[in-house]
Length: 602
Image 1: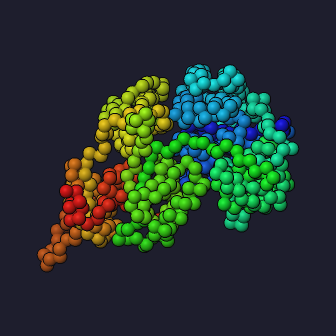
Image 2: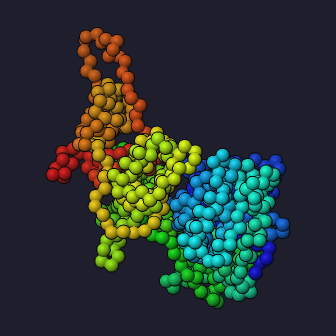
Image 3: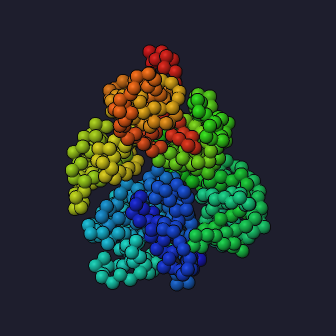
């Protein structure tokens, strides 16, 4: 047992201050030089993470406190990336569970806490944002304790330390009523006393499970995980084994430890340490690196299965190849193959149509992050409508039901109740938060959630906060209300004109602007009625020898609707596709030719 080491994960619901807390720990523990410039949310290093303000991939770091090295793993807060959290929890002995002092435990809190308790991890409750005017510290503590009891926590786990903090202002305290601002030392002391030192036999044969990957241009793939047993030095041979009997011998090139925002070369590693190992070929998440003389595989990583799937296919539109470098089905197959090896939270397999792949994930955001990453890498592809994954239980087909939490200003409670109930949602609880906002808890099928966020954002003028998590499975129910309006479909290929749009905006809401190039079969707007309508947004005004009036030269157009990638994915129906290229996201019909589409519908 390494008494001078602690391994902890920081887990929380999205936006409860988890990454900000890691920043605070790094700064106050002296991980940065006094003159070093460090960006806010320093652990979110990816472009997508910084743009969206969310953690997508887990990351490791470490700090020194009172002679003890504390390995910290920052985990995603969004439920769609729960697979990352489930893997990371196997590397740690304790967890800082960060809960907002106003919102209390939320769906992701329940999800990750249940996983942590099953693995025997000891929680430390961090009630964050206690500086907010509506903070209700004692009520949140009671809610968290009740949640632990509900999830079957042991007596030892129920005796958790409680720290009250403001990560943004940089202090933590044991008593929420303490007026002395202080620093974060109370939290670090709680880690030393509340989290056990890692176990494992340092003198036994080496054993290490790959939990995640990193990569560099010179070293290639780098396996990250925790040493379960034994010791290892650079230059030694290890066997890469899995549960299927595969055994591959590799030589370790380098071993890295984590410190601050970077890594350092380690001369060796031993049981209990979280390290990165370079030089391992053809290794996958969940594989075991072990001594060649004792090739024993650790139990495979088990994570919850995906609940949503989409079709990925090569782009076959008229503009194919004009923006992207990788446009063929072969390119798509190779890229999805690489994703399958490192992202165990996704299931990727060929679909019925040639050149089409079925990609299953935890939710729309989980899938859209993959798509956004691919388009930035230069890929062009088309996406089908999301489909909920069902399964058979005791001869009955069942579907996933989510615990949905919606927080809105009080004035919008009625419209939210109407929209959710129309999609089959069942209200379970309604709580006034004391800030002019109301929180509502629902049980709702995953099918009903598709497209709900976009609808509520429109109805509440962007003030809604939504989160959800898989709660249980139940018998597949009937049809659920989907999009009630048809679309406007471009008739021909060409540049959009203001003259044409002036007349078309009376027919519905437009997705395009003058000067944009569109093609036949592309969706250019939302119809005011339930049927689809073929229109010509490229129509030009005929020239005559008659003088035009001043009125004709002035065209006033409503602003075009700009939808994000997630909104486009939730918008499309079965006969429609989302076309994604490095420069644009377009909506289109599967069958672009109007006559063929009309015949197929009959």
